[in-house]
Length: 141
Image (cartoon, rainbow, N blue to C red; front, side):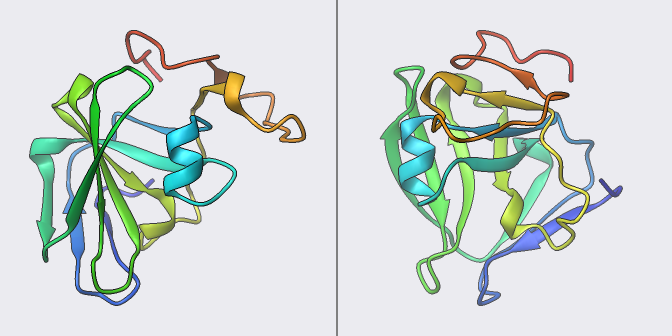
């Protein structure tokens, strides 16, 4: 990925930028991600929350994540684009959806979590680290 990570919603009402290095990239098949993102899985870049500048006013909807702790899901109230995940279990981190990145061509997940919830027909690349659930500690990826 490039030095600066930028992106936003489809209508342009919300933009974000981060100059810090990503903590990692992930795809997730937990039930919440499949429902919230209305897809097979979520794909996201994990960033240090303090380093992300957000312009615009995302709306947050709080759910209980797989950890049993709250996760705030951020989206654009105008166009509905899902943008952010702010998990209480890792309050220093924020995820941005891969689809909201300005340059998403280089996105590749480094790990896949909640493989136990993945659809049986989903074939994951062999070179991606996998976890049946969320690891207690995010590995060095």
